[in-house]
Image (cartoon, rainbow over all chains, first blue to last red; front, side, top):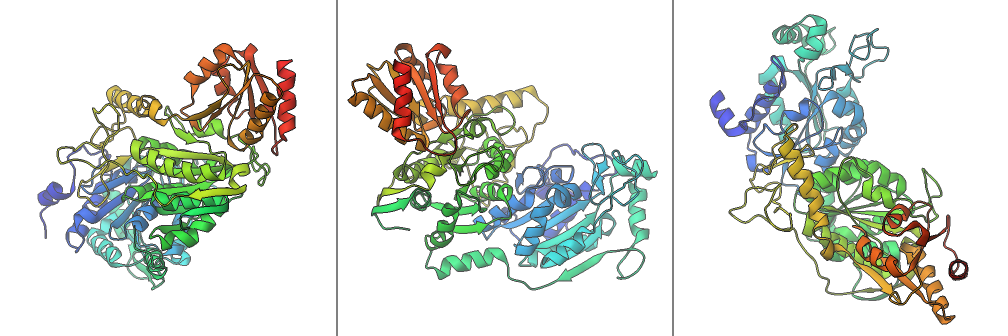
Length: 265
Length: 374
């Protein structure tokens, strides 16, 4: 396995880290880097697209590949343009739960419906962390956040199940506790010719841990205790949720160019 | 793609044909009246020309994807109308900030809100200039014929590539839905963005007089940092320093402002000896020009001025004209270009003919001319 200092040298730009002590963002960055390192993907063909929020800063500016740091919620739409513009690029979207499933929910649905060949990591910390810890579409019912001081009156949805129902080619869920499995799942995503969606439950000790009386390490332990690789238990399922073979959008667009006699510009 | 020749053609189709001739390699859009014909036509013709066509889930995704695709080296375009144009504003500002060439066609309709979808209006003139947050300058072209829908679409691509900026083709449904003679030329002048030379490693700043940095593509191995946050010359995000904000925003504004002479374009006739100059643009400028002709035939010293480029506005020329002539602004809205004209013309010398819902006859504008010069 590649040494940590070599990963840092090859994949990480030497900017000061913006992440709070104990944040899971760096662990995701590490996992992404190792997945690319262990795959056949040429780093120069890798484009990382992100929106707004803490998770968007995981690739931008820290990941040493082409990065496109976009507007709030729109990363999947921007990434679709990148992929269709040049099908040979390997496009990864790194998006927080609010960015991906809240403001960007429509693009998430249609990216999955189109089964466009993107690798989407939804970094789920269960709230809007960068702005102070407001309630998100992924916050549990009843949970106290900055904007639900009397408990969340709304309910959360299972983004991964929604994406699965919308037709994504590959859907999975892991946590930052499961880095080895996450690395393998990202490699699988890059090998999938379709829309890959990996929900990564990621600890936010600053906005969430403090409210729940846990530090980063304790949150990781919570993930360990409360997840299961077996389906249909009382715990949160981690692993691959679905793999289906459906038509992929980019390939079909290029096929149509060829069929009409066009030569890609 | 139509062969070179003369056609009886709808304005929106002429726009799509212009995009094909300009080398558009990626189009994304969402259906909306009265702009849909641009997309309908390109869905059939763009693949044949080797371009990528995709209908997105909304207008926000449409503009997002053309910006993303532009970074793969493609010339890209989307077309919409008022409601969709409103949705695009945030990402329009993103294209300005990241200096991403792309073309946004707005076939304006009568607003506000849903308004009258099939009726013309020009109420988006100020929005096209100021619609996104923060300080910036924009380029917006105003066609008034099927021919200009073709020609100005090509020019919009060229300006976008030349200045690394989004360019708006600010049409209206009068000109988008009008059918008339359009000449498709075999050879058109097309420009492509400047690529970095070997010794150039900064893609978000430049010391060049034109203020336009070179632009590589994703996949070139440059490890590009593209961000809508304030950034340094190498793309690194800088969310706090005075220097970064001051340098970047001033350059983005100067990029358009200092290149005005190259960008500006207008049509004028009989202005020099005129007591009154009719200023009009878009489809309204057609009957307005007819009214000026009639006034001349009846012995009145009336001139005609039509901005072909709305932004940056021809404010210097307007000021010169307003020194010796009164101005009659004729437009298909109440607040379209009015504030910009008021900026250049003293209020006592400015007259307004505004109209909603549909184009007036030549006589209606002529009557207003007579009323003013009496």
